[in-house]
Length: 132
Image (cartoon, rainbow, N blue to C red; front, side, top):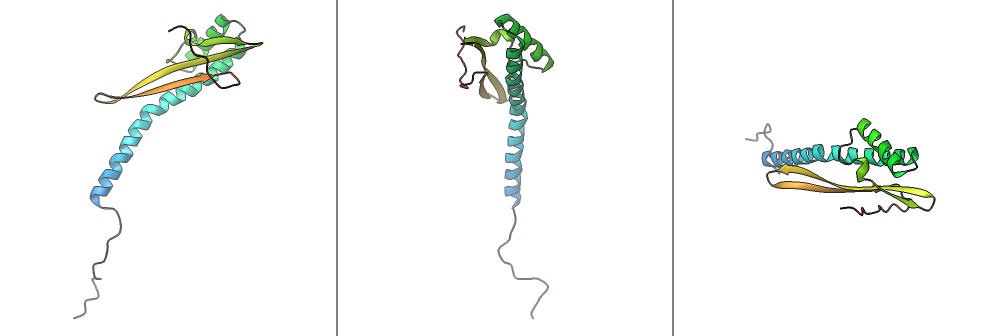
């Protein structure tokens, strides 16, 4: 008898249950990591905007620090303050730089350490802090 209702078994296509579970696990891990890293990246870009605004708002070191602190309060910036900024003269121009580290706990003893730095200098190279 020739049974046409059931085609002969050939190679199956698609993802297996184990493959699906592993794929979903990887997606969940990446999503969890992104949920922890994205807020720090958003804060970093807010700091970069705030130093440009502070630089344009003042001519002395203290005025720039105060202007940054006001921007930080409005922009929910908590990683650095105006006193953490490195402010230096470059001829007639003022350069404002910052560097900081953000430590993000992942799970157990594992943490992720991110180094952020930025500057208003045209060269794009941040001035290192003299006071540690």
